[in-house]
Length: 134
Picture 1: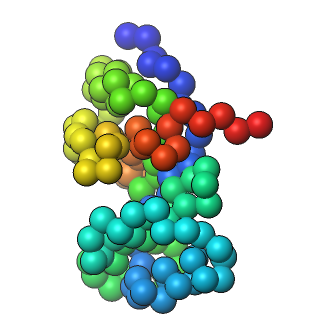
Picture 2: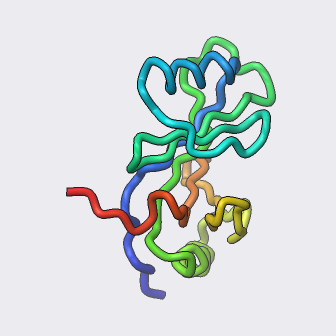
């Protein structure tokens, strides 16, 4: 099976945080990000215009480990690319943990695991898909 259209960047990062409110203030007030969308009380999406950072309240204590990457988002240009990537990943024997699904903000994505167990999200997102960075 042929690989689908290439990814168009890694402009979506998702972090689990212990203190969502403090982290939101840091990213917005200190680093200058804008609130793109508040999905619910435990999840906020931030942006600098050509990226997307999600901050999610951690479901459990993360201890002293400073690395809390929830998943890595790889942006695709078209909604249908998500489904094409799903079919390709399955054909390659990649573990898909959640198949293609729509988001309330118009996005579409799926989740799979890399060989080390990290979650990767091929993602169509209206705010970043289709952008070209020089």
